[in-house]
Length: 171
Image (tube, rainbow, N blue to C red; front, side):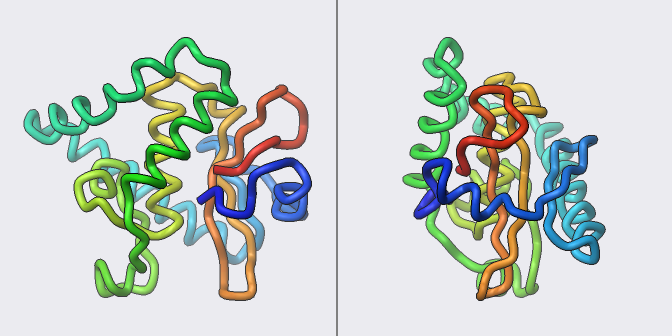
C-alpha cells in the first residue's frame, strides 16, 4: 500500500538493503525469507494461470481490468498512481489468518479481485499484475519488494519512473 511510502525520501528508507531477484522482478530483504516469498509468489501466479482457464472467471476479471484501458497511453507515473488508487479503494485489508486461516499466503490477482480483500502481499500481486501484465509495464521498472518492519514485514511494488538504478515510488 502507498500509505506513508509516497515520495523518494520515504521509499529510500524502505529500499535500503534490498537485493534483486531478476527472473520475476522480485526484491527481498532477508535471504532466509527469499525462498519462502519466492515460493508464495510462484504459487500465486500458478493459481492465476489456472483461474484464467475458466471462461467465466477470465471474463469477470477482464471486465474489471478494462477500467484501466484509459491508462494505456499514460506515463508510467500516472499508470502507477491510477492502479494504486483503484486497488486501494477496491480492497479491504484482511490478514491471511482471518481470510485463509494460515499465517502467510499470497493470493493470486484474480483471487484478490474476487475476494475484495487481502493483506499487503495480495494488494501487491494485484497491482503488479495490472501494471506488468495488463498495462505492459516492463518488469525491470516494476518490481515486488519486501521490507522488514517492527511488525514483521511488508510487501509492496517498487516503480522506477526514470529507468535509474533506484526506484522512485512504492505502491
